[in-house]
Length: 210
Image (cartoon, rainbow, N blue to C red; front, side, top):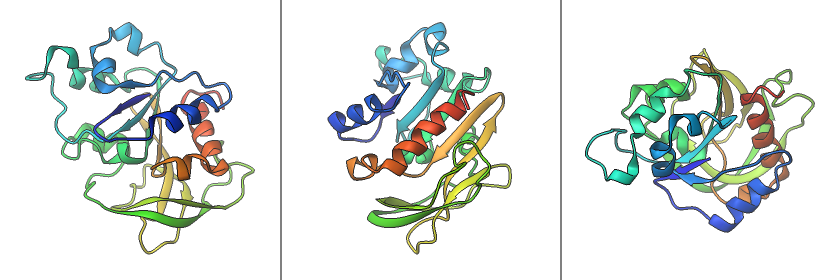
């Protein structure tokens, strides 16, 4: 699980992931991920991003401890290692085509609205992430931005004047399954059971466990 570029509630973030059954989370900054050996990075079943790094990425000009982030990120998709993009990570690297392709949105310019109340509707009742689930209400920060393209499977939607319509979607990045979830700003959202179930199933699906 990769962080960087945006502050967050560390204690409750760790508590949230410790509470997900069957998930052994190794939360680390992007510098640590990018400076790790390739075999270590490849050993994770899923790489979950909670980053909002807006510059680059580049392998040049950074401090020694930052590693080679561009190389590390360009490697994603070369294997079947799953990828999960949570909340502001869908906004990261806005001018990098590789990340835009991973997210499935080419123009990722955005507006944001904190503390909105959404009703999340099931858009695809047959997908493993949303199968046998019902709509639920949740408070979260929302984004106004372009919708995912036709090569994404829309899983959750919301009809809200201050939010994009797609809230969660699934896609492929080369050989890797990718799960994108707009939600997840803070503990107000993390404490919602519907959010937790979605993240858990997203991780399971990306890792090909369901």
